[in-house]
Amino acid sequence: MGCSKNNFPSDLSIDTVRKYVVGIDKKVKLLDGTERQYIYFDNAASTPTMTFVQDAVNEILQWYSGVHRGAGIKSLIATKAYDDSREIVANFVNADLHNNTVIYVKNTTEAINKVAYRLNLSKDDVVICSLMEHHSNDLPWRKFTNLIHSEINDDGTLDLNDLEFKIKKYSDKLKLVAIAGAANVTGVVNPIYEIAEMAHNVGAMILVDAAQLIPHRKIDMKSDDDVQHIDFLVFSAHKMYAPFGTGVLIGPKKIFEKGDPELVGGGTVKLVTETEIEWTNLPDKEEAGTPNLIGAVALAEAIQMLEFIGMDNVAHHEMALTEYALRRFKQFDEIDLIGPKEFSSYENKLGVITFNLKGMHHALVSAILCYEGGIGVRNGCFCAHPYVKRLLKVSDEDAIEMKKNILNNDRSKLPGAVRASFGIYNTKEEIDDFVEQIEKIIKGEYKGKYEMNKNSGSFQPVNFEIDYKNYFIL
Ligand SMILES: Cc1ncc(COP(=O)(O)O)c(C=O)c1O
Image (cartoon, rainbow, N blue to C red):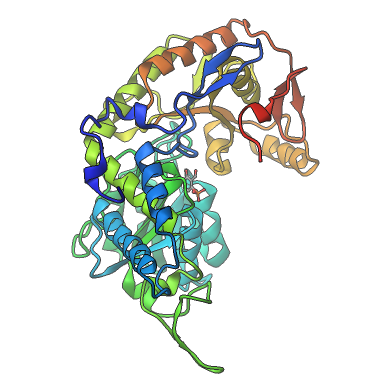
């Protein structure tokens, strides 16, 4: 066992992958005392892991020891696994390792913060991101430079004309276009290669925040001499079936070769005297401290699983689920879908369905789904406040009122929506269960009495406590 394609069972495919999901058969106790097999529709936040990934982790734990710095055989094995994992990651996205380096970080957020720091930006430079970005692909740029937001269309898709206009308008100062491969709120997939070409045509670079896109679609960074190549690609392993604390930043060596890393310490140097520091080679220079061997092995195994199943099969399965869920949702006038509603093809829409039920608080809907349906979704603003404000058409006056409320720790009236997001293992039957629950909610057929906690903005059923010791407790 270990990081090898040969470990996968011969029957592994998109049709059988569900049985290899760790925890897939877990049941939860509902408000009426019955038990139900849990349905997890929050894959856009974090995915479960797979038995093969768990096996690979268990196996490398047998060899666990210091990476890079130990002299024993276990250390050599651990070091080889860690280093080999980078190649598996690079191959997955067709990154050219002559010019690029694969740096392990904690997650997408850390990766973007690192690029924002390492680009040596000033407030005279310009970075463009869009209004659909997750806060993690927005706030790091604000910290270091002049950030310009490109517009979105009324349906929540990217306004490509505005992006092109702004790329040209700021071409003198533009250093980077930082864009989501796909939006976490609506699942809208952006034309990253076209945008890369626009950026390169004015001498700027592109960073693709692939946190949402990478588990669902094949990504090709392309070679550096291709005008459509991706300069920086960032993503998180916990959204791609390897939740063991690793994230990835792939980018040009030349950016990281010059200058000092933002985190310094063990592992980053060739030599230190009392007065001198010689930084070591990439990628180690950018990975201060003891590396996350387990995370790297888990990610490599998850990637090999996705390759084994085939990213085309992944995409087709999830497109079919999305098409099915939207078709069923459209039968209800009471459902307000957020984001684009009509699709000529589902290529450009991930399995992310975001909605509100007319006249109902988003947090109440998700609480009923949780306590009476055993279904895990997410509600709120999804770490994308500017995007959600636009999508829900929140007026500036209302936004001022909301800010006042939030600062007073009152989240009871915060706008938001409910999001259901699918992964490779979800099924149409689960969507049927979900729709059945939604229909009950619409008809007012839910049983619990729910109270809002103003501080958190969430609803809890009265007289019901989750008995954590029945599940897991430390
Ligand atoms: C599009 C997008 N970017 C960035 C992030 C941040 O990812 P992480 O929390 O793993 O850093 C997320 C998380 O949901 C996301 O959806």
